[in-house]
Length: 375
Image (tube, rainbow, N blue to C red; front, side):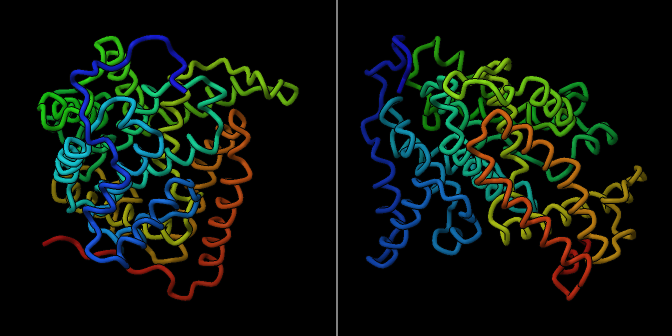
């Protein structure tokens, strides 16, 4: 599947302990019963089931990010191809877990694991590897990008950092502040040998991978969203295009970047209860930011304003609005390029809309109150 005659890996630097899928189950299981359960989770991830929930996984394993990362890397044969060893990958995952703050309700290590799994769904079910000639280096870049795409996130938005003249905003000149910070932090980790899963890559491939990762992480800036939808719509294959040739005007690296952004906001068209949980978490993170903005005398947007939160009917209406205005157009535009995704993803999105419409119209105490302000 490498699709390339270029030498990719310096064998002398490749690790030998590359059987991650087996090692991760053996290292985490404390009983035969748990080993069987983890093996079932591994098979579900290998099969790229649409409705896998990282919250359900977390009931079985204390470190979902490491389990998801190693299982997905193994599913795509990346450890063998690039000489990435279990011990080095484990050390990297320890660092990534530490780099994501558990103080964040939404932008945390569970979110990183969830977005990585979403991207795995897209790769497996879209046919993009075959249709766009993706090589292993593209897949390594994709899954590294999703794992690190919010690394070090402070739990506030770019707008907050800019409006408060934060050091990060000054460093990155107010442009994609968080996204630049995340990818910079990720590659700083790669400077340390114990974390450097790219150590065996040839220089040419390492440059290509770094360029791809930067593009993909920067594409998760929501300020780029509408431009990305426009790009997808304007370059979508026509209904009469030959499915064998799949002519697409967008370059593959741009498509990959937009797909990572889609994965970042994909929870409305995946596991329903996981989506509901994510929606509460982002609400609470936004309201916590609003509390800080009020303390600093900064403007507070309505969605971030605790005083303007009116309960589940209003909240459900907001969820429907976000999905209809943001998520649905992006998914539909992506499915125009990758029609194999449509029957898998679009019905799940409609189910989510039906859920929020029911909450809006009938109430019933489905939506928990926001977490109280921090003292």
